[in-house]
Image (cartoon, rainbow, N blue to C red; front, side):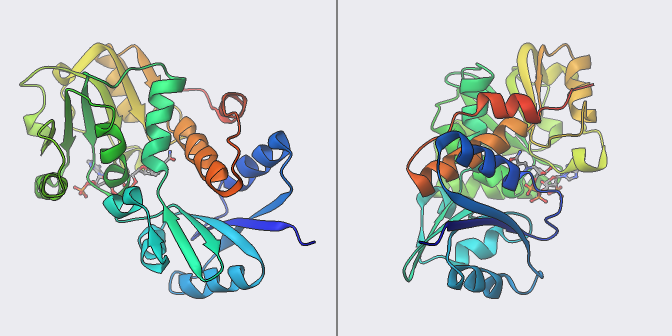
Length: 278
Ligand code: NDP
């Protein structure tokens, strides 16, 4: 019998924590599988996936820059992946290829279950209007926040994104605009940075008056310590700060459960992979 094979495909891929996470899950749940990292040339995603399938691949995680192509590649696209316009996990079954997006689900699980912040009835601010925001909107709305405001530097991108979700049936609690719209109305209880500004250590034009001191500031990037965004939130008095390592581990656990039918525990692994926010 051959061992079931999985992989993460991206470009570049050297930094990926996914192999370590999935191998830890496999060990903890007693599942026999292999999990590798595959660096695909940017213009050869389809060929890379086809080759992996032909060699016995059962599923892949997909990361930058292939999440959109992964959605187009699949024969069956889940509602979450369709709404996000992107997939972060594929499952192969004969000629069929199923696409899923677990990023938003991982975010919600981390905030709700690991960080203990209720989302229902709260005012949530989501910064950025790129792929990460796209994937987060529906899972966040499912928690029934009082308000989900998408703010973006390029304001038109936020308003267009929100209009697209409204057209698909999203409630009026979803709103969009620019950073200038913040700080005038009520404060936000939960502020999520889904911009790529933390990768380059850029601060955001975020007014302190928009942030609730009892709230949570969540940066989707991980391993960067106290980012300018988290520093701004701390300066505004926000008590709870988190980076995106829990989101990464939770989306991996969702994919693992989808592939293998058993959901691994995540708390110990998140603790092990966490880096100090200083
Ligand atoms: P995109 O490139 O699709 O979007 C980037 C967004 O950031 C845009 O809205 C852009 O605004 C905004 N932005 C970039 N620089 C600045 C700045 N200096 N000031 C204000 N806004 C800025 O990125 P993704 O959505 O794919 O990823 C966003 C982040 O989320 C990344 O850091 C990524 O690492 C992280 N992530 C983490 C995951 C996890 O598991 N923890 C999973 C997925 C993503 P504009 O439109 O004006 O250009």
